[in-house]
Image (cartoon, rainbow, N blue to C red; front, side, top):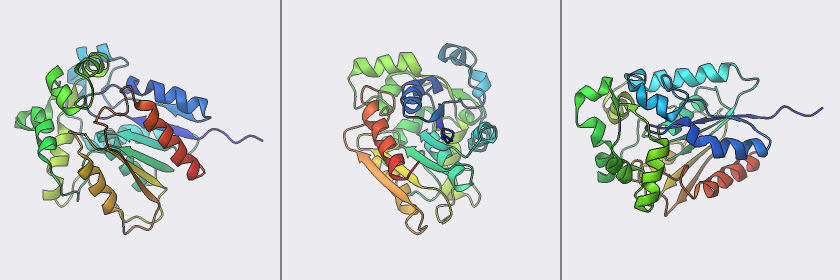
Length: 266
């Protein structure tokens, strides 16, 4: 009797619609996985509809987003592999530590509690949200220039602009405020149990030219897991920016994740 395909849930980050994962979904399905890419709570079914209904995503925090994916997972026949980009990578780590996922891959993951480096590029990337306290309860849309700095800095201006036009959506400001304050609060939704020993395997991926989540931040998150004893891997793409999951080089990243899952017998 053939075993049912392993579920894989892709989790997008701030400012990118879940449809950007479609090439990954198709690749993973062709590799035999039951892959899907549900959006965050409040996201509409398309990029255009989400742009027109920005208020629906406002005031959604890390716990709200996590709960949304827990609801998706609760309807699956087995624990999934969760693959997240940016804040989706933070959510993926929370789902794994909480026992809801069989394994997780966190690509350019949003800063979890305990990560100390705060490079200037990361500060600048967050300014469109963090510069105005009122943005905590609002939805914020990046300009094409801001997207170019935060996502497309390792691309040609043309490709960055094309990605912005195709995939950029408004995102809630709340997760950024929560993550930026995590190290100053005893209890934070950005906290992850990095010492948990009985979790599934985790792979963290960083981009060497990433401005939004600089590679030193991704590597610092990886180091927090050093005492857990659970399988934790790290890989960096030195010449890639924050757009690495949706730009012309996405397949190189996707192939690495498939190879890593195979090495874990998943």
